Length: 232
Ligand SMILES: Nc1ncnc2c1ncn2[C@@H]1O[C@H](COP(=O)(O)OP(=O)(O)O)[C@@H](O)[C@H]1O
Ligand SMILES: [Mg+2]
Image 1 (spheres, rainbow, N blue to C red):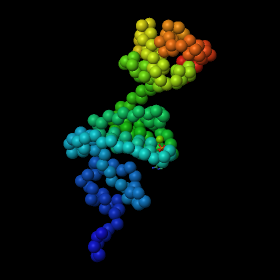
Image 2: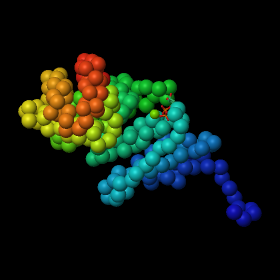
Image 3: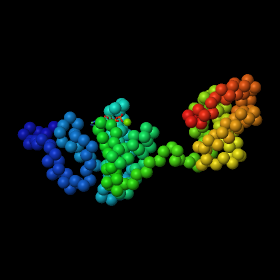
Image 4: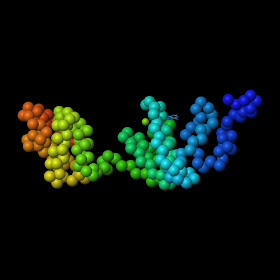
């Protein structure tokens, strides 16, 4: 507590500007002081050392319920770091909202943050890569993704040892058929895999009993390969 008689001043932007004058090139504003008028001065230092650097990487988390403004805040933070020439920004964007905002004049939401336009004006070059641009570099990754996907779920093979074996043998046989990882997305590779699955010898690897193979075959013959290729 300040003692009685201490002079107090209302903190205004003018006061803050004067106080923080030496740091004016470092300060970044995300908004106003909660419940008040002045802008809240914040530091977002780059991760290297030097006058504007933190000397280490920071981890930030933004938590809140849907619609509370997490994405908008994240976009503003991206721009805070985009000011640094040497900082690269990698966004994993499952909903595609950042990719949309990276387009020319691209913005979304009521509180529009033109991430792309501002980042470009700061000299950042943007590249949007979709899942289709990714090429797996190991067959084990294909096995894992296949295991997690709904492909075998839809063929009545629940998550477990049988599915693991099924993914393994399918990957093996595709490799033996000289399907390359970079061609996995192609319809011909899918058709090859679909064919492999019909094979009794393949099926015996992951289902030992006649009854379980019969059930699997029923599901396989009822399944629409077009749907599986497009959806799963
Ligand atoms: N600071 C803000 N001022 C005004 N509107 C905002 C602000 N932050 C977010 N919004 C708007 O509120 C809505 C939800 O924001 P969003 O960032 O998408 O939330 P979340 O990602 O948490 O679901 C959007 O329409 C957004 O434009
Ligand atoms: Mg969001």
